[in-house]
Amino acid sequence: GTLTHNASGGRKITARKEFACTTTGTVTGTGELELASDSTSGVTVTDASGTISISEIALSVAGTTNPVSLAPGFYNSSISVETTNGAFPMTILLQAGSFQFDDITISPVNAVDAEFNLSTNNPNIQIDGDLIANGKLSWVKGTGTITIGGSNSQSLDFNGESIEDLDIDKTSNAAVLASSGFTTDSLTISNGEFDIGNQSIDITGNMTMAAG
Image (cartoon, rainbow, N blue to C red; front, side):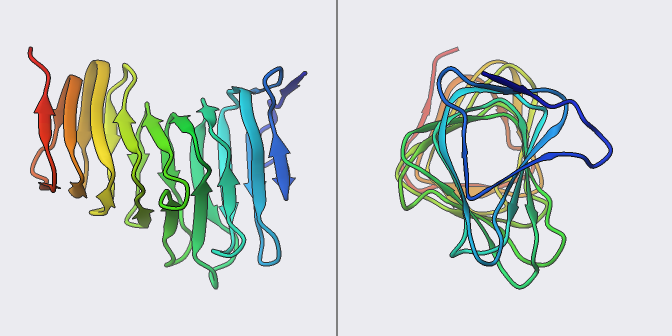
């Protein structure tokens, strides 16, 4: 079935403990879907094989022991990472498989970081939009690959973290490194332009550039 949410003015759909969008499902609209953990329980996306194209998904995270756990799939939404309790760090656990994201924005309201845990399940991820860290991104890398794709101009900020193999594979426009560099296991430029500006990149493995 189809769930359409077009409300504004702070009204949103909130899912706690479990959420699923199966192959035949669609979540769409101009509103917000909040996936919310708290100090006593996490929230798990058990299936994201359907069409997820709602305007914004807010990951409201309240603890490392109670994270937001995401199933692999295409999250064609603007992802914002928020916090509900300043006493807890924020953990987003990516399950095994392949992920595709649009924009990802870290929006902390206190001093804690948002931790993306990729080391537990080693997923592959593709980012087709901006990655905005706001100085609060903690990246726990796995052994998968990060692909920077899509056709739009992108601003990327890995907050100086160590990340997996990175592949720039854009059909048009540039991916621009924003306010900090990073360390990567390897860098491949398959297609498109990667503008690092005045930032520094530490490549511990190979660097490969396609002809052209």
